[in-house]
Amino acid sequence: MMIMVNYRPILFVIGLVLSKIALFMYIPTLVALFTGTGGFTDFAAAVVITHLASFLCLSLGHSPKFQLGVRDMFLITTLVWLIASAFAALPFVFINHISFTDAYFETMSGITTTGSTVLSGLEHMAPSILLWRSTLQWLGGIGFIVMGVAILPMLNVGGMRLFQTESSDWSDKSSPRTKNVAKNIMYVYVVLTGLCFICYRLTGMDNFDAVNLSFTTLSTGGYAPSDSSMNSFSDATDWVATFFMFAGGVPFLLIIQALQKRNFRLIVNDAQVKGFFLLVLSSGFFIALWLTWTSQFAFIDALRVSLFNVVSVVTTTGFGLDDFTAWGAFPSIIFAFLLLVGGCSGSTAGGLKIFRFQVAFALLKKQIMQLIHPSGVFVQRYNERPVTDDIIRSVVAFALTFILTIVFIAMLLGCIGLDPITAITGSVTAVANVGPGMGNIIGPTGNFASLPDAAKWVLSLGMLMGRLEILTVLVLFFPAFWRD
Image 1 (cartoon, helix red, strand yellow):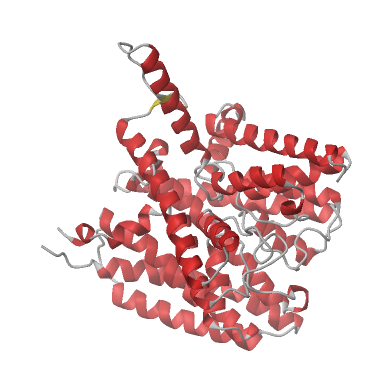
Image 2 (cartoon, helix red, strand yellow; image 1 turned 60 degrees about the vertical axis):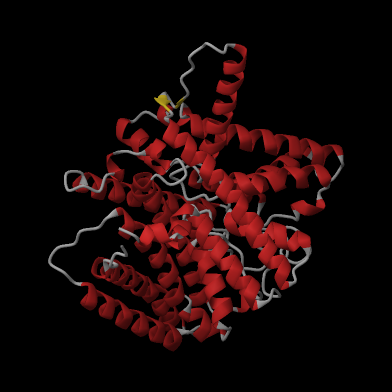
């Protein structure tokens, strides 16, 4: 039996999101108006269109009482990102006069905090459109944190139930708790963004660059207001960016708990944060040794650029500082692995996430001990919590789907005509939401403008699937999902 789609709450939620998109469009609109740098009428038109669409959705979806089921949550999660990206792309079409394909790719890359771009000559663009790019990434970052804390654990996507708290329970009993957690996440996100801005200013950066880069650093997005990315700033700026990119890759709910209890050992002692820190430190240190040994940098400079690039890649930020693909085979192999890893669950980072690797290694250890002691009973735990069989199955299913999605998208890109390096690394960087790929075309010093339109749509789908943990989107294509 086919069920009817519960369209009223879906339309209402989409209308709410579009209304917020329109409100945030006012910021670059006012910047264009008061600076006289162009783009005012274009942004004003985008604001009007988005407001009208929002009003229509809210009117059609209004109801005295809403009842959202799990099926509705899956559908809403995907539709919101798809439709919001379409309307948020309008300023790029109106101001930059680019195709809707390029505008949608740029917007999807921004709102999923991927950081891949089709634009060049950023230094000569209107400040309003540069600010809008950064704002999209900032909004996408906070959106994903809330989704990762409150929605995905409830849906049990990819083992996320391991982090289920009261904030993941959408019952009437816990809804005040959910709202409180969302507000606390927003407060911490805004404060950290402000601190990042202040630190950038202290390094000598001007206000406009500091605002844009604080938005895209903490959101681990990677958009910069110039084609040179982070190469045109001071060494002190690199350290500031490294710190706040790392902060963006840490679970925000853990930061909130540490602040509320005034006990920062909660962060230090967390298994996921420990693994995240050790991965960054060890990778950065070994690459720095390589760069020093091959006489490419002095050790202090080698440590700075290696840690920056490692944190940028593993948090899926994608800022560019030098071309790490030109450092030799050893660093390139490490970076190829780091493209997949990602940061912590409940952070702004994408990728597979550290906890899934840790759960997999714990499972491997359990299997080895079971081989040594066949009659022994071994309980798998993570962060002092038992790891149930359904969580393990969910993690394994997600990891398999993650790899298969990368392979499938890479095959599509190959069929479109992309070379193997561009197709494979483009697929990886899209699904993992990293930003730059490898090779001469989409490497750290290139962009995605020259790719065929079909490839951009495929990569946009990959970015969306990666950001929504793949299974959230994939489940919509199964007929069983639509049956009662």
